[in-house]
Length: 508
Image (cartoon, rainbow, N blue to C red; front, side, top):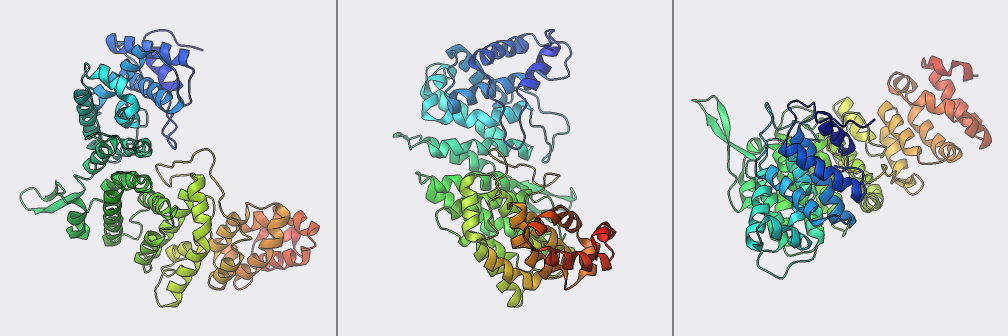
């Protein structure tokens, strides 16, 4: 049912243009609907209702952002006056026309906020194709319009909420993809200035006795050298995320700023590693969000064969099982998001497994530390990323890609089994790993591996595995069809003796 009264219009627009958090965009609306909704948004801003559960500024910015995305990214034909209103709306938000929310802080999450909507699309106004729209908002002056867009972007790049900064730099992917402009203000240079602005407050100074706290200080040029010279415990880890997210695609684009982007990205990745290792908690990146940002950048670089960064990260965490496991899972999760990263992960993963096993054999401690060590060992076998509280900002294009192939990884898995035997977390990861195969192939390939994991310590598997009993029950008929019931039975009987009562009716 449509809500036609003034109070309900912001809500109606908010529902229609609701942002999907994982992708940062909305469903594409037809041109007529967009045009009509832009007119409604204009009316709401000019005559806001006295009360609404949905802020008119948020609703208007959502519609404006959707219209600009439709125009620039999907070649949607919209009236010039509508596009001009959309551009002016997001610029005004970027310039600070909307009052900050009370109690906003670094980890505030609100995908539908006006500043998030403006950040999502403002970089598109830096593209050469946006010149006709910029001419209108700049009163006919190209210089004035570019400066206005840049100033609004720089303001958003310093937003309190990290979410705003991330939304801003994600859209820079389109800026890097556009060819260099033949003028003094290439859009790539402007985009890089937005990236570096997100870094200005990523360090804290010394302790101030009078205030009893450390205050944020500006990161000085040259940024890469300043970061390298900064103490590990002075780095604000989450303030590195936006720049790391932006620079991977910038390096890959091979444009005028790519070489500088590569230098800065290397410094940022090193700074993130140092900062996380410095924190005494075992779960310094317990949600994996920082590691996921780095994993995207590292896999992006590896698309051109530059695998060194991945191994630098792994080696840095060789004696920290919590961070190592988090990084391995983040690499697998980043590979689920795009086909290019999936192909890269598929190529590098067998070598990555062997490399970590060699670290363990050479005296490092990647698998010690109880639960964290077990999870690091298990994470050498890719499995579908969890959908609960992990990873605040996924970027899955459609559905998560199950990028791994158990058959092509057979040799690496068999080397892993020697170390993983008797570890319950490894059993569950192996079951997730096998899920890409048909039931019959799962039992053909997986039963020998499952036997190697379970039989050395059935009691430990029975006490710690969440998935083994269900997998065995669901795949019994496949084992019968594949003439592998005796091997299936051997595992079941061992687990029943160890106390898995769910399997008791299947035991002989």
